[in-house]
Amino acid sequence: MKNLAQRLRGVVPSPIAALSQAARDLRASGVDVIDLGVGEPDFDTPEHVKAATTEAMRRGETKYTPINGGPALRKAIADKFQRENGLTYALDEIAVSSGAKQIIFNAMMATLDPGDEVIVPAPYWASYPDIIRFAGATPVVVAGSEEDGFALRPDLLEKAITKRTKWLFLNSPNNPSGAYLDREQLRAVADVLLAHPDIWVLSDDIYEHLLFDGRRFATIAQVEPKLRERTVTMNGVSKTYAMTGWRLGYAGAPAEMIAAMSNVQSQCTTHASSLSQAGALAALTGPQDFLTERVASLQERRDLVVERISAIDGLRCRKPEGAFYVFLDCRGIMGRKAPNGRIIENCSDAALFLLESARVSVVPGSVFGTPGYLRLSTATARDQLTVACDRIAQACADLG
Ligand SMILES: Cc1ncc(COP(=O)(O)O)c(C=O)c1O
Image 1 (cartoon, helix red, strand yellow):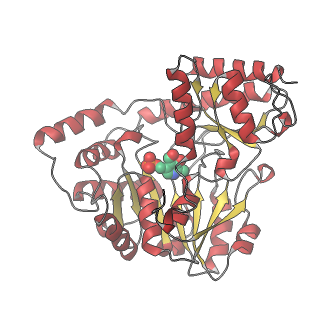
Image 2: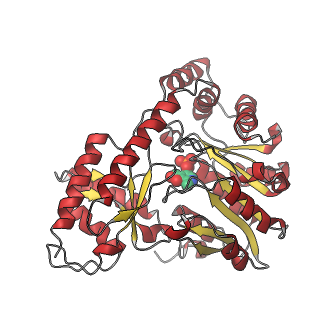
């Protein structure tokens, strides 16, 4: 299109959504594709959340709310930050948006100018660089490696910082690697940041509760309280409560930052849906015990996939500490020939090969700034995961 805005140059529609669509199209044409591409839990939204939302609708909670969400929800969020993260936020230090993605968008639109830089450790959630570019700034990628457990290395962080650095993004447990930053690792990152007082942190804690093997979650503003004044601690109900479609994310940050983000939001979506707010209130204040079972189930499925994938010649993967993805190294099948005669040269070829030969949809690591890898979602029923692993093993065995 000729009259596209400058700001859309270089911003691509979510490649994961496009891959998911390709898998859906194949399925619609009768091919039995197992979709391990999506970043969505296969659990249902808890019944008590649905019931509370229906009740809110009956009560007439169907009108405009304050931009940053109703006071009851903001109070529930402040309580959650206090209870689970030891962080104290007043009600004017809480933002509520239509998904955690909008929190990031609001914060970037509110603070970035052309020439500004944002440090994004890789592997990263695919939307980060595009949101940063959309806001007119430049993402500066710090590559992580599997040898370091995909953790952000403080020395590499220090090297990436310039006078133009405005933000550092952190995401633990991480999408796509499942890696998590423990207190010690966060401490090391905080020590670098303390020497650079103008850099803000966006701490994306959306997978907070999906941690395995008894690990305990920590977030950077909690580990180093001096950073609280320049951190947006972000979370949401999508992953923890299986409420992706409700579109509700939230954040705690100093009041000035929340006001600036709110300004952006007031001129686009106004506020998150009143009914989603009712659902989030029920999710945050209701029973949390169902989570134990769900996390145990995700851990079991992680174990199943890691074991099966590790047994396949040419594929390798580390055991993720959290979230619901396995990030596998597919460099061992590069240079090999698919049954259709095509040579697998990169991870996009590998993803296409698995879609065509194994009928399993996965996402190439290049989308997350880490070529040579593939992301598999493990939030799929166990029997489907078993069939998917069988098919991947067979397809790899057939490689020339
Ligand atoms: C790391 C990360 N952050 C944020 C989000 C966005 O969550 P929401 O559905 O609340 O917009 C996702 C969703 O996939 C994610 O993986």
